[in-house]
Length: 315
Image 1 (cartoon, helix red, strand yellow):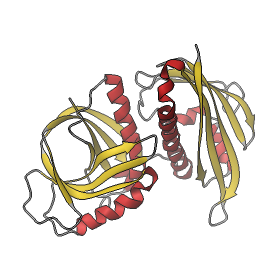
Image 2 (cartoon, helix red, strand yellow; image 1 turned 135 degrees about the vertical axis):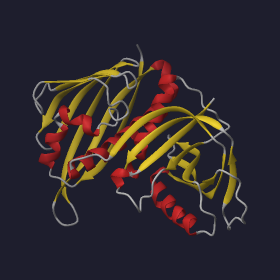
Image 3 (cartoon, rainbow, N blue to C red; image 1 turned 90 degrees about the vertical axis):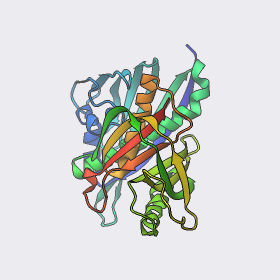
Image 4 (cartoon, rainbow, N blue to C red; image 1 turned 90 degrees about the horizontal axis):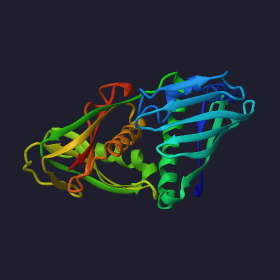
């Protein structure tokens, strides 16, 4: 079958030696801890064969939602490079190549660090030609999620991110007030953090919820339109501070996903949400926006104990 090629790469710096990073990346037994796909379907069966970091080391997976495939280590340069053959069996068949390149460096204190660059050369079936840009964007986002988890795992020994799918639940209507921002996707924390601080310092009644409303999130162009907001079950009666908006969310049904852990890993929750919507072929309710609700306060609990509910309204 004719296919369309695409390429991408993403990088991150990990405060560990290249030898340490190489040993972990070359061992498929460790991939499940930081894999951006396994976190979406943690019960996915995975089989690992042959010795870690050796040519021929393999892993096979057979997921219900993330598909099935296999990966094999085919080339290595100790502490510098690992190259793999990657075969997808479902949801469609394709052959790809992927590599990790390691560059030794130092952190600000002069301790060993490693710049890790993750490459992929993939293909799409010709009938999906229109998805090339979107596929590159989605896989690139997966790589970014994976590298963040890899960094946390190698630097701390754990990954503070877990996702539970809570199913479709009825949601009451509410009013929300907040500050709207358009920004590049990589500036979200930089923009939204101060916006929430400003919101909490505003002269407004005690809210029922603290949340972010997603007006738009463009994965391809990496631009977003978000509202840092608080919500009320009943319509509040107060004068809106300058620059603050108020809108009403009608009652609706929504798929609920719960993310537990650091806010830096919230994209794991959103990716799980999107994956489950696609798997179940659920139809979005375009009259109601997607949103996330912060269940506890980051000033009162450790980052590993943070809980965020993510909602996709459906028809």
